[in-house]
Image 1: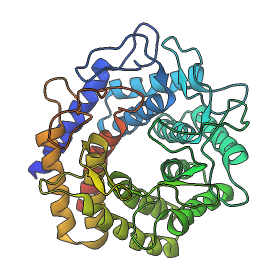
Image 2: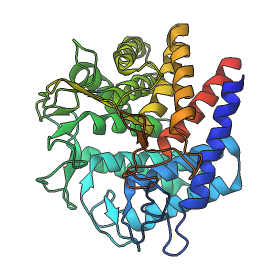
Image 3: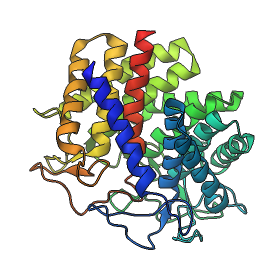
Length: 395
């Protein structure tokens, strides 16, 4: 079908951008930032999250393409992670290094640790390099040893370099300074799922099951079926906002985690939760098939920006809903999502995807094309997921 050819072509276009514009040939690794116009911002810090997302992207791409350049860039990202982001004294990964690779922000953000595991395990899956898997396991053990709340369950947000308490635990300036967040738990779930594919001790199985139960019991609101975003250490909600992109991303990542575990009772329960999350996310879909960013219930208004990553996750979430239920409405939602993306989000001038468009459907020029947060993982993964799922359906 034409839609799948379009998505495969777009996958190749995204990867081509990162091949040509992200590699730092002077200082090693990958650049820290390009602006909206794709202009390089010299000497920008390099983030561990971006580097590990690039690592995951090219490892996953190589599985699909078998192109040597994708394998080479996956190896480049792995080597940079190993030599510059890993903290050899205290364990874990630094948040940022400077443009030359010297430690800059040395805090231990549980979110960043998760992406290190995610990227390292994907690299292990294509390379067979046991050192990559061992690094992922070491980071898992650091998370379990330092970040886990053994009293109330779940995981704390951030620590200083030596794992001592940190006053400001925020992931970004727009976040609340709370002990636990949905976002960190979601990406821990994602990382632990990928690690479990290649390493299956009882401890990891138990922690992955715990994370699924935490979502069902603590993070998914039983009344609205939206995710609770920020919580104190006792799981009390601190933020009355719906994040539609996270709702729909969680809907398929939870189901993926459950099916990877292979526990039928958990999978049956998660199937229901996944569809409830998906249906709640659909409340943010506009007439043109786009999914808006947030709904602020306290202030009584929507943030109608359409960010690139939200649209990418919508594609997968709707397709997953169609696969789970057979409901053709979800497939139509997937088609509309892709149509919106190709009409509004693809940057045909400078490459890759725009950060997003605002409430007036205008590009957001103050946002990055490549940066700490602007990465190839959401949109590459969305394309790969759709193409893999189509192939599975045909087999």
